Image 1 (tube, rainbow, N blue to C red):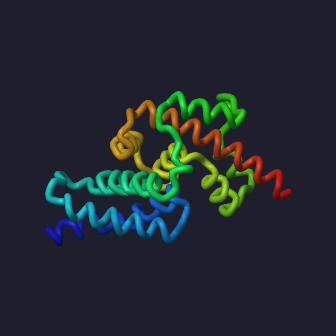
Image 2 (cartoon, rainbow, N blue to C red):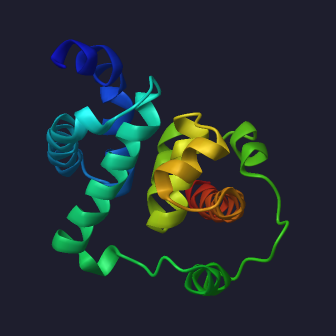
Image 3 (cartoon, rainbow, N blue to C red):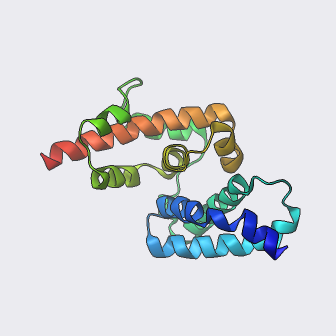
Length: 176
């Protein structure tokens, strides 16, 4: 089992840390979450079937992050239902179709501004943007990891991109 675990799961350590880091927004906390996630992964590895360990592992990391956040930073947890997310989106004063964050990125936003803006996103949007744009996961993989329908992934990704664009514009105005 250890050889198979090492071959299938260990190559995704960086992706696991990256997701945990973006969800927790803290290096030390991410390390703790990843360590706990790998302990859980090893414990339940005998139930894993197939060769696509990355989505399986990232689902464990995501769930471990949320458990950790509920215990250690409950104020950061937001309602995960769509009406509550919609209300949070509307509270930002954004309307649909305000543009594309990739355009903003191409217009000169630097990595530091992007990272800061990404950290401002509410967790449900931030995690989806990170999984799609940074980890390059498919909608189907994200849906499996997050335990939500693919349509919800696309909706949260779209809203997350708009929130990111808005946060980037705000930071770029402050920087100039």
